[in-house]
Length: 280
Image 1: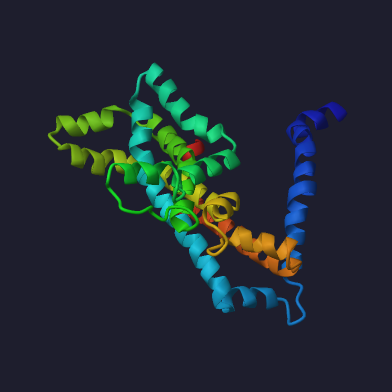
Image 2: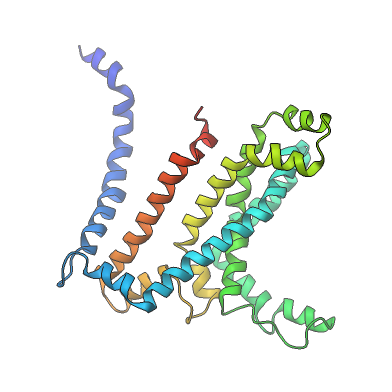
């Protein structure tokens, strides 16, 4: 009887330590965070009313979501041709492209941010080069604002867009676009009728991943964006470490959490992004 029980539930028993660790160090803290967000002297939704009724906080949310969405669009435009070249290159070419993609991906985020700060600052490398060749008369404001944040986010998030699209492209039967070309379709039609629809699940998966990670960014906005135009992660940190309003910080964190869950459900339910990981 014992051996039969072990055979029947062996998979669950092997998963039990990981499930317990996940419950103890992730699920329970997150649930406790959500609970704290509903503790307010004016009612359970007092913190949430403050988030969505104060213009300053609404502006922070709008700025966070807008810059995250722009990052998604720019990454998608840049990543698609890179992913196509990665999927269609030779073995040596794939190794070279992967190295170019992954070396910045493996670099410490603080190092990347300060590197961009040196490049984008008014006296930095880029402005000095543009001024030296006469393209601009004065330095461009590329750091300490949303332009710097957008540049840093795009460079950091690009691998998260390239790799899902390339994985999707690797599963496409090359005879499909070949058939379209053999039937006389011009290159634009081949792209619009074959490549684009067949890679849409990879684009959506990468877009969801990039957007979800961008709305929680702290280091890039803090270093490249300055102190005036803050993001939601900076607002959470300020309420935890400076204002000591943990309930309001918990409400802001819950807004990010709910946004993440909703985007994931929408992606799986209506766009089938789980097909990228093998669902048939």
